[in-house]
Amino acid sequence: MVRNLVTKLEETFLSLLLVAMTLLVFVEVVMRFGFNTGIHWAQEMTLLLAAWFVLYGASYGIKVGAHIGVDVFVKLLPRNAHRFFTLVAIALCLVYSGLLLYGSWIYLSKMKMIGIELEDMPVPKWMAMSILVIGFAMLILRFLQLGWKVIKNQAEGFGMTDEAEESMEIAKELKAMEEQERLEKGRKDSDKEDRS
Image (cartoon, rainbow, N blue to C red; front, side, top):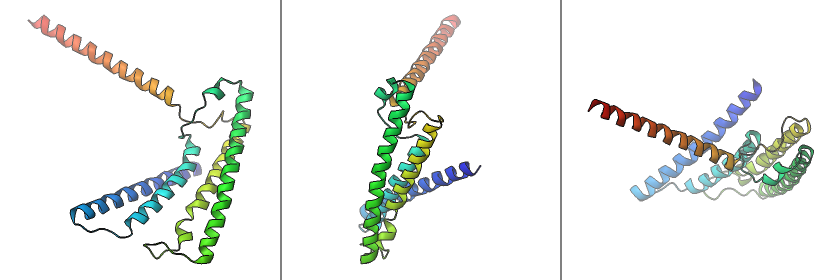
């Protein structure tokens, strides 16, 4: 129950970020091209919303397996080798995310020490850019969770979206729809011939 609530909150937060960003850009375009004016802070706010959406969304993508990846070679390996390479990949992702978290921490510490504000809004830059630390910390948490699931045999890999498989399913559905339409058209034509 708590897990479902957390997932709903994450989805709501991401949805609000996307809606806010879209509405802000829409209003800015209308004001700029319709009324020859604009919102002076809109561009900077849009970039911040996009940063929050991308960095927070990356960790959510790991959680739900929404990232796209190329794992054709790994899928051909035996199960134990597949698990081993998945754990190696997770370890590399943890190292990479850890380096970025460390660099983000240093960057935000310096921004706080210097006291720089955003260009168009009176907000401390370190506060607005805090998604760097939050996003990479959440990525590390998600990779640790995924690694634990792989170790406990609850997951086989990253659970990435298989585009080829999805494309084949869509193609099958389209073919079935076309066949259904052809059959219906054939029935209608035969009904017309029977009436004549």
